[in-house]
Amino acid sequence: MKLLPALLLWAGMSLTLVGQTDYYDVVAEPGDGIYSILRKQGLDPVTYYETFLNANLENIKNGSQLHEGRTYKIPVVDDSFKKTGVKVQLIDKKETPIFDDELANMSLKSRTLGNAIYYLILESPASKNKFIADIANNLAASLMVHGAKVYVFGSGEENLSQSNPETAAKEKMGQYIEAINKRYLQNSGKYQRLLVIRANGLIENGKMDVAVYHHQKSENSQRFAENIQKVFKDNSVSNRSYKDVERIFEDRNSLYLATNTLPAVSLLTIDGNSKTNSPNGIPVRSDKNNFTSLITSGILKDYADLEIED
Image (tube, rainbow, N blue to C red):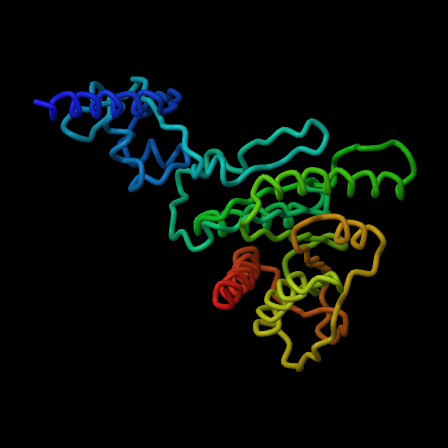
């Protein structure tokens, strides 16, 4: 008889835990099923199928079908793509999802980067250089589907100061440093890297020169840069051999950022109208998908190398 009270207590605790799950409401659209409605909300359907089913049993027909126009409860989870990919506004400090309608076409491929946090800074006005904005979004998606969390900062359009350009640039760097370091400390113990993507001039179809820089005093920064750089060298459109010339931060703003941010930082610069005989960069094709794939490969290699060492 002592077993009955224990069972009742366990059942009560289970119900309490279920009741504590947070949900938000979404109205089913034409053609929605459990998989599609979860995917549209950035959730992995395989992981959260049962959770969704249990929370919406009264509105499920034929075992898995949804009623068009009815409201369904979506669980609030930390690994939703809406939370693992966010844009950070420097002025109001708000976070918004990177993707919305695109979520329906995204699906989790692996959790290889489940312990990784990436910060991407774009130094190019999106209105003038859509190529860079598209590259950043593609890169964020490529990392997120492998379990990473990605923060994207800036498009170069924030009016942080009306003073001279040098003061405004330093002010912006200060905003980046504050925002990134805050999140770095919140994610203490995880693998965290900062990549700055800087466009020099308008990037269009054709060829472009790519160079990767690192902070001289950071071993992690150097390795991060070298892994990305190696992938570009291996996929250059030029047949010439490349010397392993170290490219370190030289301009004042990059040094200020690298010295004061907590994660290891690397800078990737892109110059349009590539000339294959340029000694300052690695000439590659400016195809968005190919370019994103190259950066992703370098990032994955860096993470894998660190995992092997550990």
